[in-house]
Image (cartoon, rainbow over all chains, first blue to last red):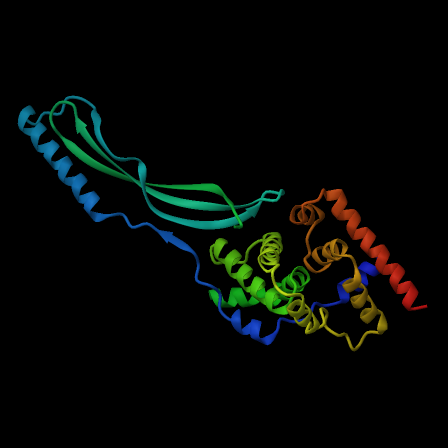
Length: 137
Length: 166
């Protein structure tokens, strides 16, 4: 059961925002986005290197596929960060606030058959969500 | 399907919550101008960090408190005369309720006279709609302390009203 004083307090309404503050808050701020552009020259360099390896192996091996492909080169181990954004803010019940950060990474690998010289360049986009503590300073 | 713009969501959120946020900002700062600056900064910051959506209520109150403390530390060199001038221009913290009896006016005045830590508990609980665990988290005290501060504040208000309405 609620206290009568508590009930009366709930009937009080805080004063309205001053007009000048209302004007300052007329529009929401632009959302914070951190976009890291994937440099095109890195992709081009990776493709060129893969093509060279493919050509060399093809010329030496004569074009026969005999075994499972092996990873001979991995561009940017762990993936290249291409985008990052905050998707939520949560409080852990203590004094700390956390933001949930979504990251997008592209993993590029060059696959090559151990015999036969076939080469493929693969790319995978990986999404991760990780908590990061917010510091208020 | 109704499409709601980001500005509509922002405005709806402000119309529901901003008055209570502003009340808390005014209690935590030394002047109206400081309260307005802190509130604007906090609303923008928490909105952005929530990815352009209404942030958690408790996060906003916690951020207002921290920003106000930071501002107080940085403005300690302000002269006493300037502080007094700023403090004297304060507007009423509550809307006048012309339909109600004197009880509401006395109650609003009594809330303003509560010790700071008790007033904070009342503000966060009544107008902030926060739970005691959330209030404890924001004010940095155990949950039981937050709850007992609130109960003690109600006792003081009850005693005050009993005295003035005799």
